[in-house]
Image 1: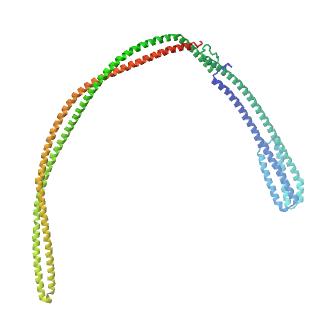
Image 2 (image 1 turned 90 degrees about the vertical axis):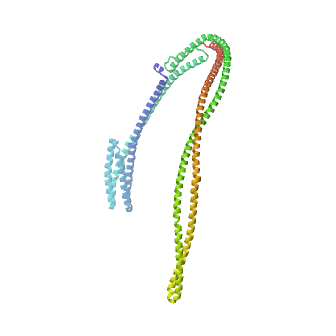
Image 3 (image 1 turned 180 degrees about the vertical axis):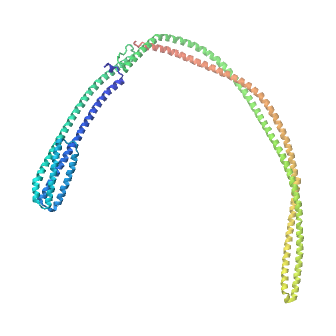
Length: 572
């Protein structure tokens, strides 16, 4: 029992549930095994006995029905129904063979039943032989002999077969009854075993639950009593638990905690009065420090105001210097920009000079070239006069031809009939002469127009060449001169811009030095102001801290008093 008591709570619970599981397994195994036996006996009773009884009953019914049909064949003597009866008898024989085959397939037939069944089969063979003889006799209309064989053989064999079948049925019935009794006995045995196992398990579980609850509730009540005593400031009584499980360990830990709390309360009681006295001394010291920090704070405020005024003045000077420096930088930038623009102007002036010189040379070249071409065109235009001269010659020839044609026509008219052919030729020549004269007139008019247009072109070309030679060339000369002047002006502006840039840089350096000095002074003033502010903030924080310490000291004194009052409540 001590072993179980000293186990941990987890192991105790596991042990109890393990016992429950063991009994459940035993009950389950017993039930499964017994159910298997009952099921096996039931299957055996059905497969061997009930099926055997069914097959035997079917065979007995088939024999009775066959015997009934045999009586109909012999005594009714209805030839029209003979074939149907014979067919029915054959079908009944086949059914008997089927049931006999099923009965033979059962392997659990006893020796006694097997001997009886063999006798039945021997009687059945004789019965079938006699049956076949009777059928043959009936077919041959020998009813008397058939009746004789039936009465002497078939009736006797039928009684014997039915008797053997009944004996087999009785044997299977008794066997089924025995197996049913075995199943009932097995069920009762299983029922009793389960009742015994369940009762034992129930008693063990009740006992273990009682022990477990007693070993859990008892320590819990003791722990609850300790908690109640602690709530009433009573640290005088410890817990007494002898178990070594979690409750025992908890009791040991709670006893140690109670003892530590008792020691702590004793120390607090001893030192609470000293704490109260120290708090009062600290409060007085803090008040003295607070007065001194207020004096220091006023001095720091004066220093901070002076540093701020100095810082403002230096900032104004620094701002002015920065404006001057910005203006100088802007001037330097403009001067550098002017110098850059002047250099670009010089480059453009050089480009203008070059382009103007090239344009002048190109113009002179074009002028010379066009002048030569124009002179050549004037020389080539003289061919128009030659064409005009040739046209005049052709016109003169046409006039003479016209006169000759007129004379020929007159002579042909004089010749009469003989001159008619010549008159026709003369008339055609006259017409051709007139057409030639008209063409020459048109050519002369065209030549006059061409000559006028050529003269107008020559005059226009001469005017253009004159304009190029006088005005354009003069303009290009002026452009070259302007380019030279533009270059000289840009060079002067560039030099002036460079001088301004150099002077601006010198001024910038000087102003930068001044600005740096002012910035240093401003930074020094700013640092002084910041340090003064820092000192002031530190003094303010110190003052606040001292006030907080004073408040804390006062609160600590009050707390010490309350602590003393509370400690008086504890019972150690």
